[in-house]
Picture 1 (cartoon, rainbow, N blue to C red):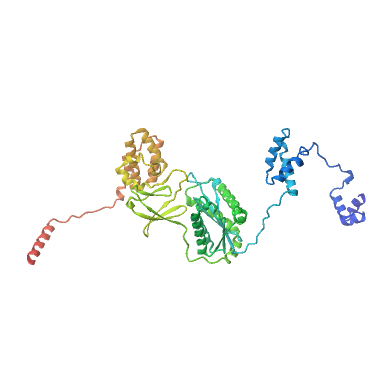
Picture 2 (spheres, helix red, strand yellow):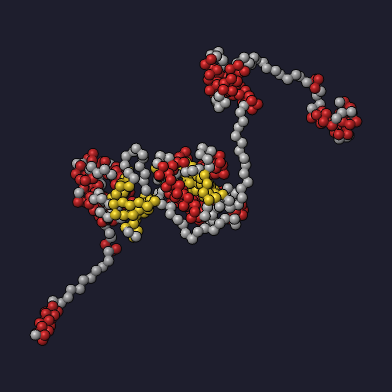
Length: 496
């Protein structure tokens, strides 16, 4: 070693080792650590006895052989029950021993086979829950999911906010939005059997849903396919990106500084921006795959459900445990509806009438209401006391401050006076189109703990005199009527 170290001062490791009669490997080892093995301290052994020496082979191994899927924590709790003198600190040691034993003697595990994806071959659809992100709209928590579409080869992604469950309507709308934004169609469309959509459906409903999905794929020339039930890893090309997308959205929300959005459209634009940045990173691969996609059909296909409703004398109709109000002139008419994930479009024959926001009632929960005070205010003016026991009274108020003012009126006045006053306020908002401005005045009244002055509010929101058009009425001279009558009598005599 001394010779090697001397030669090393003027020669390379290989030459110095050869001249010293050492192997090159020994030379490199001495270069890194010149201390001889005989001069090194022996490795430290165990300082305390092995707590599992007497029980691992006799008790733990039989449990692992009889129940291969048994969790280490369950075995740990069973050992503590059998041997109360064992220290709880052996848990990590036990888990490490079990992991090592399973690596040598355990059962074979399922192998994941990595696939080669071809451009234009496969697109995948799935839904992912967004509840843990705590997004809110105008201060109200938003219970929603994302419909997520992805191309397996290029990683092109599209996300669509879904307010309901995993349904055909949600998938049809999201899938078509994705394909038309992509500008082409892949050969195959893979889903997870729409397991949540099939849930609690009878056999005929399941068959109908499957037929609609197949018809949707036929319209776009795609071959529908489904992974085996319970094997989510078969959709690995989209299951993994779920987490990446949600983490990207969560990071964007943190940098935004707020998880509250003014309306649903602004939140959807936010999601589109996040997904757009992800697609921009894969732009080259997306351009390669676009060249292999099939062309889009001439038009989109159905992405809604057709429903038929009849408007009752209550000024609305019931649809899936939700009561919707419409203008009273439609009472006793039968309407056609297109039910989307987030809205309901109404038609009278072929004439489009309006779009209403869609609401959902729980399976065993109370009925819900979608109420517009503009539809019923003309009748409430005639019967203001009907407001007192109205089933959808809380939903009738367009803003929270109207409800608070009504509660204050009930405390300080009679029920008749409170109903009359709040109906007058709603009528004023309807007639003058000043709902937001009136709400601001009512908020000031609430801060001052005073009842609204209806006369003052009417004067405040009355149209300005200079804004009214000037109308001049020119009265005819009454003598012209005498001339008209005389000429008529002359004509009658001439005819006789």
